[in-house]
Amino acid sequence: MFATSDTVARALAADIAAALARRRRLVLGLPTGRTPVPLYRELVRLYHERRVDFSRAVTFNLDEFLGVAASDPRSYRAFMQRHLFDHINVPADRIYFLDGTVRDVDRECRRYERAIGRRGGIDLQLLGLGANGHIGFNEPARALIAHTHCTRLRPATRRANAALFGRATAVPRQALSMGMATILHSKRIVLAATGSEKARCVNRMVNGPVTPMLPASFLQLHRHAEVWLDRAAASRLG
Image (tube, rainbow, N blue to C red):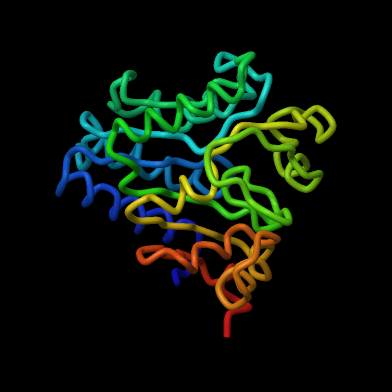
């Protein structure tokens, strides 16, 4: 547990920098949303201070909105460019995204799974935590889909992304996302959650049963899953 969201970001950025220094070629799974923004800002700072090198890193983003082009400023690809990729030295051919504009969604999902496999799987998967317990765009459901897939977004998730689109009703109703098995096959997982609004969900994720109605609870099944919290997000933990 850390005092603030900024201290979470600094510590996690230092951890990632150390992992890159040890291995050089590191396959990273990356999230979007508000929580990782301070982390990306810190990674950019470390890069400009020449304390981290991304030239041999490989990245896979968790998800993308269906029907939104990579060039659209509201896309998750554009989000990642603004906050991270435009400012560091990951080669373009080592950055992987789902294409939200494809006609054949199933084919695109299979392509992504194959790409992850060809890179040897994800070494370090970073995650945020949705207020309803989703990770990636794996929404609460009676059953979860194992691999990369198209999913229908719940109203709470669309509201959480309203800032990108101006209003919740403009947020696409569907998205492409890595599935839970894809995420759980990562060698190491770090979920970061900050702020008091995540505290109840954090407690359920850590102390509650493993259930598809709270997708993040499946992290309990992973041998090398870590939860990095600030004091506010940890406030309901016993």
